[in-house]
Image (cartoon, rainbow, N blue to C red; front, side, top):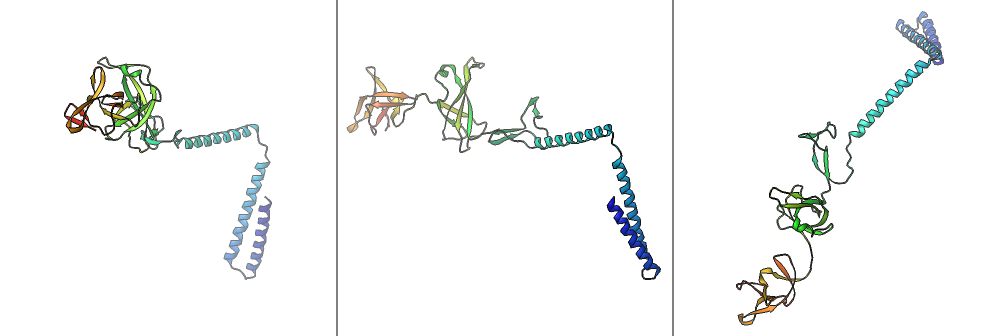
Length: 277
């Protein structure tokens, strides 16, 4: 209010000076009118300041204080709600990966999507560096499968390429199809650092029961038995066929390992007319 009083005093002095100058003919009527307006404005500001001072000096009741606090709390709740809504507007994935599917649109509430009555996630995130394959293994072979066992996978869409991985899990409950065939679901994981494998591709999985490296192999159909022992017929000198006894090792059903009895480069006779080195 002190500032308003000072402003009024200054305005009054300016008006008095202008009025005297106007009477003496040194200033115009318009200049006097301008100073009169400034004086009236200063008076109005003083009255406003005095009224505000009276309001400030009036005692405040406890109900008014409670009402003011309630208003503050309500405003705080509105702010918190707005901040929470802003936080929820940003979707953060708990894992690293690639967006595989988006089931919602901008502006929709996350978690509210459904297809045929089944709720769907707003967004699907996957680690495509390692892909999971769900394979069905018949009961006659399931005992040969174990966790972390090595596997080799091929895909119809990636002809000529092989991918390697291991067994992740073996389902304990069997499935029986309409023909009565009993199978168990085995999940395997393969490396996909090249990102060639895509979700939904058809895969063929070979479970590696045993493994041998840098060994000599021949076709299984080249092996015969003589006196109960495995033998092969080789193409000898001067076009003569020679039967040799061999020691065999592992086989995958189409090829068989030869441990002893053959040397690299010898020609094996298959069905008497085919030859294979």
